[in-house]
Amino acid sequence: NAGVTQTPKFQVLKTGQSMTLQCAQDMNHNSMYWYRQDPGMGLRLIYYSASEGTTDKGEVPNGYNVSRLNKREFSLRLESAAPSQTSVYFCASRRTGWDYGYTFGSGTRLTVV
Amino acid sequence: GIQVEQSPPDLILQEGANSTLRCNFSDSVNNLQWFHQNPWGQLINLFYIPSGTKQNGRLSATTVATERYSLLYISSSQTTDSGVYFCAVATSGGSYIPTFGRGTSLIVHP
Image 1: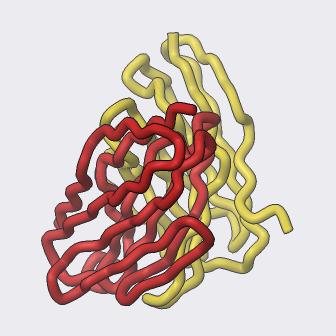
Image 2: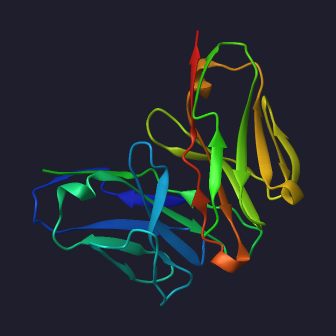
Image 3: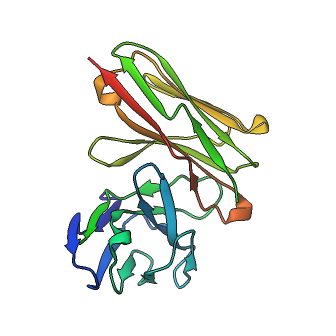
């Protein structure tokens, strides 16, 4: 009954370091999404996966890569972190079909120094 | 892509007051949700409402899809209502990818 689980909740990186943000959902949803939230900007889509085995770029994909490991898991990787990637990252999932809403994880607060 | 505008951007209320938040969107949508982001940053799904009216306690929402807007009503506001309210819309032409407005920041004073 966990919904969407993100790890870690907080992370501090040095410029140039790499890391992977993990996301897992237990609702058997087909579609998964990664968003970043910056002050005054709302949420902006980084990448999404409409179904297992597919990934597509969103509005702000530069500097990120993703992997849809299986139906449950969708990870976001920063290969060489930059201060501009300091943000709060949210993962979300939904069932396929027009009439289903989205469920969000609790977020990862990332600071790049 | 679809444009989403929320108003007002900021709202300050005294506890017990009522308020209406608005979400305008630039194209027909198949999917619309209202979220509340609490002061701890958690996004909580309030309503899935692509059309019609729904109510949940002191909160209700109405979407008039033909006129491309949605309203969120908060009655008898409480301090726990503070936070940011987001509207997110999606279309079939956009693969149901939700586009978010910039939110309405609500502060409720005791």
